[in-house]
Length: 121
Image (cartoon, rainbow, N blue to C red; front, side, top):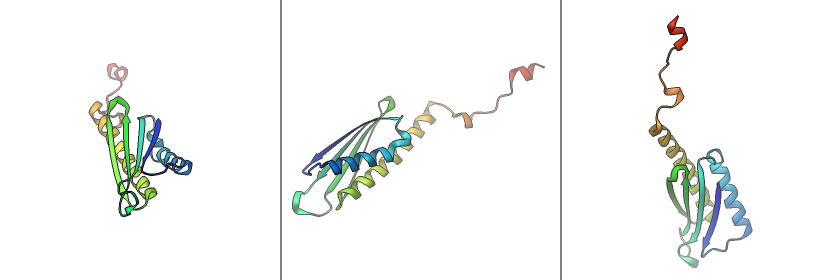
């Protein structure tokens, strides 16, 4: 899973980069084989005016080319990052489950078939 972090109107310090990458890996670790690329965009929408303007956008590229985009804003950038990545994890889980259902039945949902050798005797 490739992780890219971009910032706009916010200084992207090494601490912020490390925190964001650690949170991405934590949120998506169990699904990392399904996620090919993650792009995190951090932005201060209003600049120094203040308010609910710290925005975190996450774009995900899943296996088989599917793409997801999630966005959250908050007065605190770290809270926006956490909320966005939690929502991203839930969205990937739903997308993977949906893809499995479209591919066919899962093993636990398949009807039981008797062993052919036992049926012949």
